[in-house]
Image 1 (cartoon, helix red, strand yellow):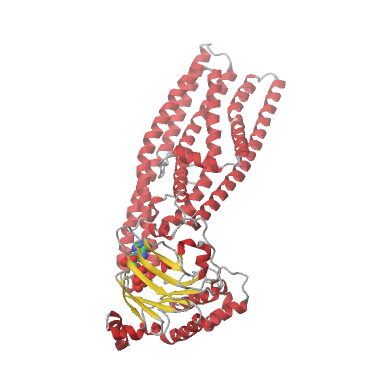
Image 2 (cartoon, protein in one colour; image 1 turned 180 degrees about the horizontal axis):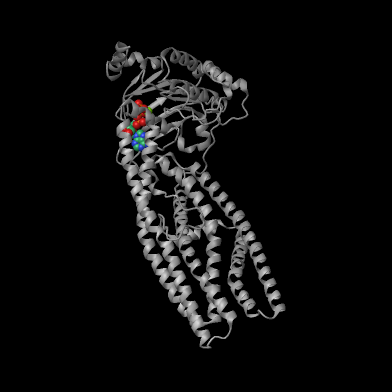
Length: 603
Ligand SMILES: Nc1ncnc2c1ncn2[C@@H]1O[C@H](COP(=O)(O)OP(=O)(O)OP(=O)(O)O)[C@@H](O)[C@H]1O
Ligand SMILES: [Mg+2]
């Protein structure tokens, strides 16, 4: 069963993760390169970034200076004026801190969101240009998560982490400088303690990371199963597999539970341990200070106060930086996945001097066309056929013989591997892609409806269409009667992308959409396979009227629906086995005649 979510672990979006959690960190493959690309995306916001850097430095000022000032206050006890003055300083400092942090958040939010807005726009604009072959190669869920989760992670984590990372780095450096200034000897002692904490964090996170990765993997497996069970519930019930499903779910749930408990317990002892070490360090330095004070080697009580306050603050940023860095890495790895999509080759651009195609006559000719989706696995071989303008051609053949593939080549969803396809005597690749696609009104085999109103689904791409035009298209294919029975008629929103309609009703809507587009060439791939025979006949008669002066290509398994076509092309295993009119093919007494007889006898 698929473990879909594995590739994209949810990043910890709190900005500050729990210390030692060490969740599933995904390391970027090329940190430097990816950061460089992200940096280039901030073009136009560099001034703002400069401000963020500056503000981050200021944001650390309060942490760096307040212990020093407090020490001064303690030392000045006794002289009333000095204390008041120092306390005012301290209050001013905290006020400034608040202001600086607010400004920092303000800049980070506005710049972060604008950069992400830009990335999202670029990404979507790019995805639009990618060839269908790209989507074939990928699992849709994975692609979706790149387009949504990964982009979100970049935005949240980087905008949160970046400012925190900067602030904490400045804080550590500043505190270290102040400690060094106050007492190099005590600083050296403290550093030893901090080193210990750092090493400990590293070892423990290494261990917890593995446990969290296991938890993530089990979660992915569980989610995959839930998704499959929900979407395939009808099949599960039909095959009475409910109990197996529940048992399987139970096992996965147990495994997830075990893995989670282990991971959480392991990470749970780190924080208290760190506190203990931190406190021990504090006590050690305090005792040392006391000894030095008694021995008279330090005389300034203010210095002791300041230093102890610094020691208290020193370790925290280290741990935070380690955690934020992990989040940061996950986000950069997400950015890498996003950039991978941006690096995909778009559909080849129109040829130089591509001609526009306004009102094609509709002469189609295939010359020795060969094609395969995967190199070395030909689907179509040496297909040559002429479909004169204004005629109706039907493509028939067994399942998997390559009928849909032929349509994919006609509409240039894919390009031929060898040979050529001509429209009005010119190679398809000589036309501008946009014009070419507009020349075809296509009803695909998979009915695709959008989560919009029935009306918008019919006039797809032409929101300015009048209600009369929409009604007319629906009326032609006989979809009007069922649409009017819907609760809100044409304004009914297909919330589930048409899943709430019957399969035949969905087909009627897609045909109405193609009729509405009123393109010069009409292509129907199994467009009426799910409607009853009476409706099918009605549609056929309507289409005959519409197609009277247009070229049309129709794929159908029910041969009775296409027997009047001007030409019937029988595909067998990627090759044209027979072609001609119904009468000619029946006279030939070959595959077609056999298929036809089988169907009529059965019918
Ligand atoms: N996107 C794809 N990637 C790889 N192979 C594909 C792809 N689409 C189709 N094929 C393969 O190409 C062959 C022809 O498929 P095609 O969809 O053209 O058949 P068809 O004649 O339309 O069948 P049906 O009557 O079932 O619709 C099949 O063997 C199929 O497995
Ligand atoms: Mg097909």
